[in-house]
Amino acid sequence: MVSIRTEGVVKRFGEVVALDHVTLSIKHGEFFTLLGPSGCGKTTFLRTVAGFELVDSGRIFFDSQDVTMLPPYKRDTGMVFQNYALWPHMTVFDNIAYGLKVRKLPKKEIEKRVKEVLKLVRLEGLESRKPHQLSGGQQQRVALARALVINPKVLLLDEPLSNLDAKLRLEMRAEIKKLQKSLGITTVYVTHDQEEAMSISDRIAVMNSGRIEQVGTPSQVYFRPRNYFVADFIGQGTFLEGQVKGEKEGYLEVEAEEGLLLLASPSDPTNPPKPGDKVIIAIRPESFKLSKDTNTIKLTVYDVHFLGKSKRVLAKLGEKTFLVEVDPTLEVQAGTAIEVSAPPEKTLAIRA
Ligand code: ATP
Image (cartoon, rainbow, N blue to C red):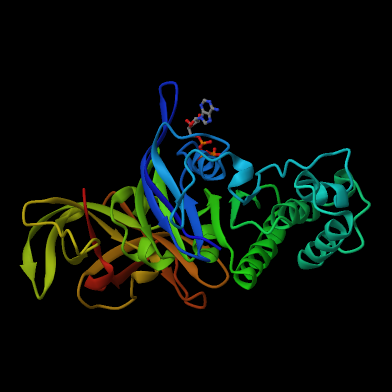
């Protein structure tokens, strides 16, 4: 188990800056996720950590060891690729054993280690099958077993669940998390699925165009997004343009769209907006209360979506759509008016 530190890592492909001065610290045994839209540089980051790509500038450390120029086989990382990249002509056993054979381990030791790891990923009895004789979930486990069998210092997972159906994805998500915690292996996980990132990670780095926008726990990036990109990418909400008027009752007073005057909290308390600053007000759907209080807003309901554990109410104020989550047993009809309030501590003012 190691910590990973990157310092100002830059990686270009011709004109494209895939990694733009990426500085990150990933702790011992941490489940760390890179989250961002397609093409933002997530895979490139994993590949530079694994050593499949050399950086143009910047440094990468495993604990205090500078691995920037080390070839992949000297870095001790195990990687699971998005498409699994299993060898189709090899059996499950041989696919998993490959890395150990390359390292010239004795046959007995290879058999023992492959057996152990097959047990770990619950694939016992399938060792003589070929990949095409396995389900998607089983292939995914073989890829995981192949990465783990070498006892890597670091586990790198590139969208490992994206080829699985929704139900299996949830199951495998839980399994990977459990396995990671029991092995205590430092793990970097890549996904563009914000829900997946939130449910599986100790911390998340939100990426955009090769840059890190914010690093934090799932709850920090969700409830304290540093900027609009993070707020919008990480989950749903109501977003209103506004301008800070001043302070009131310990909160920011913000003049927002549709003539609203709202009390809000700075989403980044270390760098709060000042009077006159333009801001985006962000309110998560579940932050609204269905009662009159501070920040009461009168809305007209135009659609209601039943989600099982809640109801999502789409309502309008003028031209603006509000997303409000309510108890699923509550009767809310399209065409009716509702009064909601947004607690000032959950009404976030993000610098525009
Ligand atoms: P996705 O979620 O779609 O896999 P990503 O966030 O993993 O995307 P990367 O694959 O890291 O993104 O790509 C980052 C940028 O670098 C993209 O613009 C991509 O087109 C470019 N890129 C990546 N690899 C290469 C390459 N080998 N040659 C040229 N451009 C590349």
